[in-house]
Length: 529
Image 1: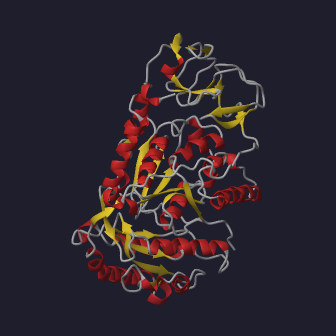
Image 2: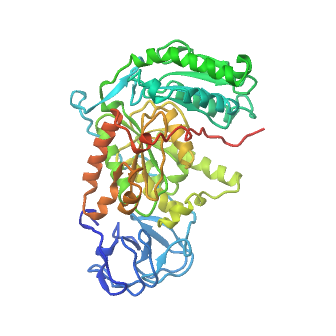
Image 3: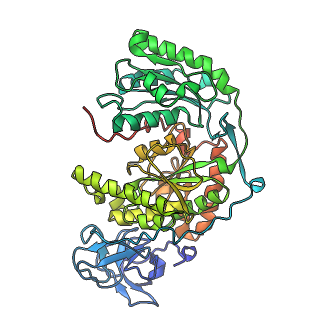
């Protein structure tokens, strides 16, 4: 049904009410509707297109109501797609959730490319612009920061101390510098040189070093670790820097300890500050935006309000020549066929399927199930299975063709909607997207994630108005207004304009509170020796 006519209503504890006043049926074939307001047992939902349904027990807002009788083992659909299979017989009006809905294998029709619709890309001369930092290699940053990159956990504290030395008072002398950030982590040793974890970490650190939002950086190590600074520089040709001189490199053992390394690091950054400050914002085409698409703390409204609105904004971004980066492979599981059908080639679609199969093997190897992905908060918010969660998550990618599939932290070079393989864990996934080149993050949340990520701004979009009002200090946009009469198109337009403003320097709520340094979290596959 159209969401433009729905609205929140107060209803009595029992009585008769039109179904579309208090619930949303997203597709005509769906066996479920989503409660917009808490529903009490005994309430009768009337509909002109189906039999009346009597609510059999309390159903929280955002949760699913059975619209017809279902036998055990039957598929259940939402969005017109399978979200799970009943584990018991269900009567009309019953609450459908974890107690009576589970997952099972089912065939997905990958039909590579059948739903590809060409994009009418806006002419370069007519594209929107934002004020960004143009780099010597042609890429454009949305922030201009100096990074203190720790090569190993042993230098994490030292790296943070170096960054903390640069207070707002000191940086006030350099108006074009947006901050100094420490990129510290828990890895860098205890694994095999050249192994998977080693390669993932180096690719991630190198991606951050040459990121468009990083005007300059220094490398800080301990000295005896597996992930040697010299190897990182050689393997990824970091001696060229970002158009500046080769990066200063400090080893704690060579410098004579933590205190002396901090002093040396502070001195190195003081020398870099004037150079970084010489780069000022200038008008740049929106086509230079690479937007990481994230959702966390999702709820039953994520796939109804915020994610579809973000998808429409991504469609406009792609029309303007820009790039949206979908990720979190375990969170497209069961919905990947919707992406393969939009793949521009069979090779692109097959690569996505290969990533899904890898995750199936990975989960088996670690005695996990991908359906373990929905968190406690997801389920409280109305999401039941990974299939249901994935169908809502995929909506962030809009309707544009899928142009490429990337490995974790791989450099993003294609434009349009692309996919990056990553875990569903938000900080790990976002770290890969940013290391690949994303210069803006849009993060949708239903339960209230307070995510931020330096050196890239993160826009938070609330899926429902109740949470937005409760956490307004942390939310940048309220997509819950879709449930109060505003159209998805109107919210998407607001979001697109907000993306341009934030890319031009407007602070997000997380940036204003200093959030984002601890979220840097490179993917570790677990091969610790």
